[in-house]
Image: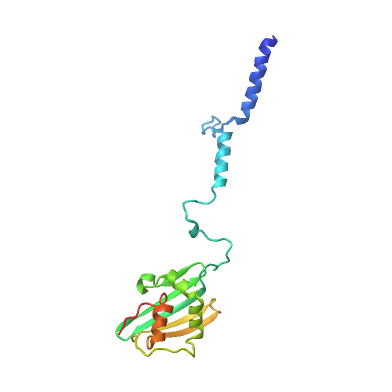
Length: 196
């Protein structure tokens, strides 16, 4: 009798050990069990993968928001400027550059003014451009006497938000300093000169 009892106990222990990985069947509304069968091991695995892949890896890292930055934080300054460029022989060019720390835009659109919003907001964040827009032309500046065309650009707006530092600057090409400011210092902010 013990000879038959030992294999029976072994099978009971084996069944109990396998029972932790049992099959769960959820009954339908009629109690017939029409829903798909899921094992506990399968449901645990699917739960673990969901927890591990909380970030969509198909999205490049640079497009994901940096959660450590405050609203408006980022590499661009907080600044909004309206720019009007006049030339006696051409239509006026008017656009607005808006930089909000983590976003950059040119309105009416970069294609209309020829200005790249990323390059413009990056340039507006440099100390040289900021100083020129806020302080104007240095008083001790020595310039060559050459004429680069009748283009005139007016830049109005503010750094650091609406109640920030106001800007009302004018750029022309009436001498070497003005040409250099237009083409180099403000090259990413002002469109190319229409010339003579």
